[in-house]
Length: 193
Image (cartoon, rainbow, N blue to C red):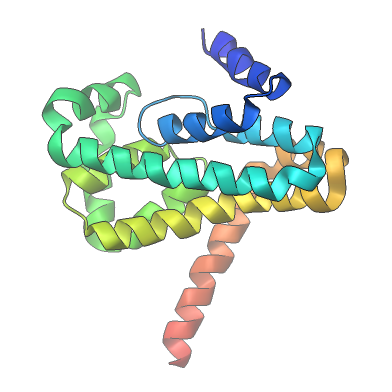
């Protein structure tokens, strides 16, 4: 079933509605949908490398908006909708662990989930459910989701279709390396100042 959904998402790259599909996919993925928008972003960007940065912007905007929707679901509708989403992904047992991450790391939890392959939707829901300050949530989401999608879009813009294989093969490693560098940068700033 997941493969059919994946193929359905990819087919939008071959239609004139690809950019709209990317936006709505990014909104949905950030709050409930299982397929990440990266696959459609890559397909669209490879089809038109000069538009890769534009597609990254569309994907980022949709993802942050979807993150806000996930926050709203967690904040107002956790018992009726949010718990079903968490259960669908089999993450009920991880719920208290996510709460602990928020109590200890706050914005870092959102930022790392927003950039890495960790299910971002669970963190958007939990941010609302745990009443994380919305401004902190929004800023961490904006930075992390934009970094993720602009990294992909920027690489395709600069290197064209040949970078797709590299991104597919090393995305998780790139995400972890970027996160380590980002966290290390903030620690360095904190130590220096």
